[in-house]
Length: 514
Image 1 (cartoon, rainbow, N blue to C red):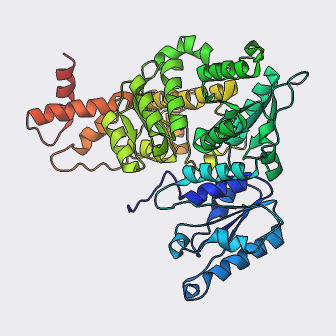
Image 2: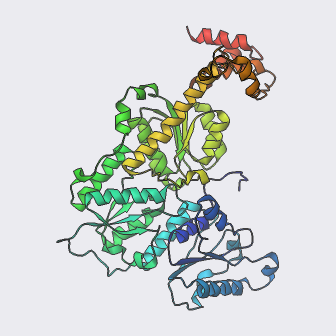
Image 3: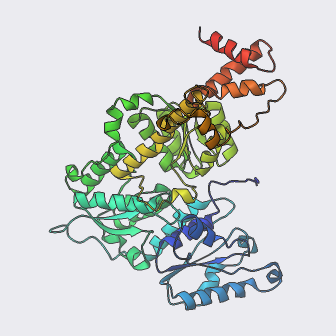
C-alpha cells in the first residue's frame, strides 16, 4: 500500500455513491465506520448539489466491534427504508468494513423489504472508483431491466435510443447529456432513457424498449451495454463525440443504426474555422502532454493533433481497465504510453518531456502550475472550479467550441504574459512610467502605483545554477525554457562548469545556435 497526498480514483464504494446520487428513488446503505462518511463533502461541496446524497451509513465505532455489527447494519437498513421509502436499495461495505466480513446482502434479505435490494461486492483492495461505478450500474441494470420490454414496431415512429453512462460527480456529464440530447433531436431520434443520471428504477425497467444504446462514457457504461447487447440484442454506438471529427463520426454511426439522414445535424463548431485561420499558425506544432481517464485522454489526443495541429509528446491514463485502448492510441502518435495512478510518475514524465501545454486532471493542473506550463483540465478528478454554473459541455459541436477556448487560451495568455515580462524593463513599460492613456506623469504614477513585485527568491544548489542565471532563464519564453535549461546543463556538464552562471547560459546558447 502506498501513502499518497493525491489520488486519481477513490475506492469502489465511492463509484457506487456516484450512481446512487445520480439516480432518483435509489438509496445506498453502506456498512462503514466513522471516518468513511465523506459523501456529503464530495457531492455538496465539490459538485455543489442542492441536496444530500442518498447514502445511509452504519457508522460503527471501535467499541461496536465487540458487539453484533450485523444487527447494527440491519437496523440501519430498516431505518433507511422506513425514512426514505426508496424504490430500490443498494447495500454494501466500505473498504474498512469489508475487513469485518459481515454479509450485507444476507442481512438485508432477512429483513424482507418490499423493494429490490441489489448487493454490491466491491473488492476495495483490488479495484477503484470507476470500476465500482460500472459494476454498480451493471448490477442495477441486470436486476431491474425487464426482458419483456422490447422495441415497438418501427412503422410510424421515430427511432429510440438510450444514453448510458453519465453520473454524479462526472466531468461535465450534465452538460454533455444536454448537448447530445439536442443532437439526437436534430436527427429525429428520441431518447428512451438516460441513465444513471436522472433515471429511476422504473426507467431502468424499460431500457429494452430502445432500438440501440449510446455508450457515452465507457468507464461507466461499457459493462452494462455489453449485457444489454447479449440480453436484448441492442446494438451500441461506441464513438465518443469529443471533438469536431469524433462528433461527425458519432453522428454517422448513430444515423446508420437509426436509419436517419446524418446531414440533418447542424455543424455549429468554430474549431474548423480557427484551424484554417492565420492565427492558428502561431500555435501549430506546440508540444502537448495528455493524461486523464482513458476515454477523455484518447479523445483529447485526436483533437490536439488532427484539429489543432499540436504535437502529442505524451499520452497516459490512470484507469488500468482501459490500458489496452490507451496503448493502441499511443501507437498512433508514436509515444510511449503512460499507465499509472502515481501522480509523481506523471510529474516526472512532464518534467522529462518539457511540453508547452498540459491537458490533464486537477493533479496535472497543480503540477503544471509549479512548472510554469500552461494547462487545461480535460478529465476527472476535478475540483469545484470544473463544475461551472454555466453551460460548458465537452461533447458535440458546442463541446468542440469549449475545447477550442479552454485549450488555446492558456497558450495565448501565456505568450502575452511572456511579452509583458520581456518588456517590463523597457522605458515605456516600466513600473515607473505612467499608463499611456493618462499622459506622461511618471512621478505621479510612481506615487499611485504599489511597489514593484519582487521576484520569488531563487536558491540554487551547489554545482547547479546561480540565482542570477535562474532569473535570466525565466526571461526565455516558457515554451522553449525547458529545452534551453537542458541544453545549458548538458553544455556545462561536458565542460565541468559549476555552478551555471549567466555567462555559461549565453555561451551554451551561442554553441547550440551554430
